[in-house]
Length: 400
Ligand SMILES: *Cc1c(COP(=O)(O)O)cnc(C)c1O
Image 1 (cartoon, protein in one colour):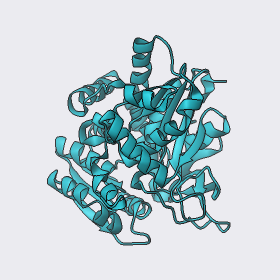
Image 2 (tube, helix red, strand yellow):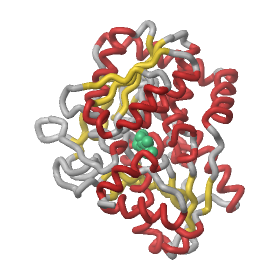
Image 3 (cartoon, protein in one colour):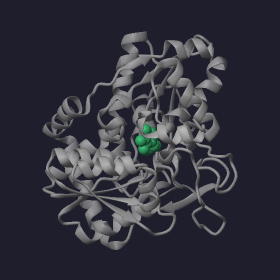
Image 4 (tube, protein in one colour):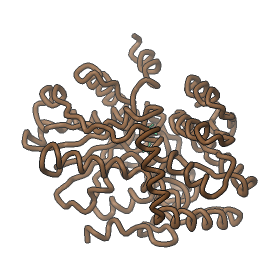
């Protein structure tokens, strides 16, 4: 039973009733082509060696599994380790995926890269690999996000990327994804679309998961070396769900390892005030290519979402999460904006590590539960990114 959990998706990208390929006819052929190419690449040792080489030399792997001694003492319960994805090149886990996908694009003979971005972290990670491999790169970004994340727009432009403002709808991530899909339909012969999370149509949720799974493979090896046993609990924040599944996947078969995904609870669980798809307001639906839990009203209209952290602020969750929740393999909770802000400061103060606001949601959950878990409990928290991008926003919110 536990073994089967890693046997998804099927050939058509289904994770049980979730996932699949819900796209216009014009995208079916390119997606099937991509799935086929990826299948060959993942079996090719030379491709895997190439990915490993760039993960080591360009991205900065392996990352430490760091014993958070003062955090552990302060919270007075579980022994806490941080998986330091915040130390990766460009500042977050996103680059594990973009390096894999650009090598796949190169293998497929593509010359042009497109991507969507919300806060800009995925855009920056894409811009970096596009520059490294000398490919033309266009990143679509909501006009509102461009204003909020001006520094990331500048970083992308420095690395030679053409950042295009999307002015439809809420002018944020969802609209940027739609625009990137439109571009892809038109330019599919020359262009590879690097999607940034375990979202969208097959093969993206599987492919992005595979590229991110390096985090959990490393963490599993490291905890066995350092503690000579497996952890009791893994905790990670969940936007689309890529850093969390990246940490969790290698442990799915380990029965004794509990897993907790923490969504963006925003101002609280009221319509339009949060981005927690597994809380009230979330139900089964289809969004941007995949069937999964979506925040929508009774007519199937996508609801407005809110989170202090742009990376968690999206109406759908990756389909594999919906599946693993049904299987009762992963539990899900949420942290509010206020709790995340507190965790942001706490982690900075006691560990000298400024977490991304997204990652601060995972820390917030641990702050609340460490004591109850008890001193014998061993916990790994995924530090998905660093908080440099968030300090101006936090300073404004705290009126510092
Ligand atoms: C983008 C981002 C997230 C959320 O995306 P997932 O796909 O859920 O991982 C979390 N943390 C950081 C630092 C990010 O940049």
